[in-house]
Image (tube, rainbow, N blue to C red; front, side, top):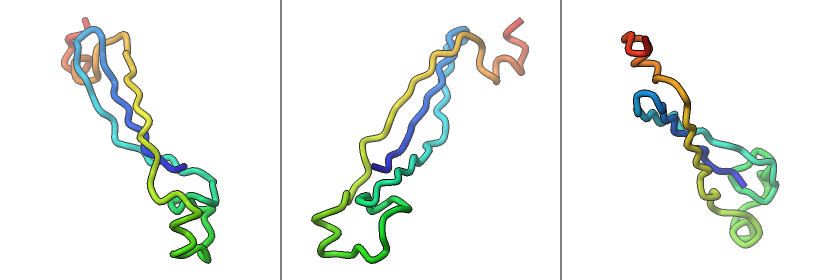
Length: 79
């Protein structure tokens, strides 16, 4: 099923947190109405009973990066 991916980078040296832009992950399931594999001929009312009508809960990742964030690095705080 198609879903969103949310990634957050946490920098351990300075504690700053940055959320990356949400990314749409597309599936190849013909029974997902958001998929490019979903046939254009599949229309309501049959589509609403045979196909996924909503996206799956978003994947969420929190990366802990053992360094300073790019802003602190650029400001010279990493020295």
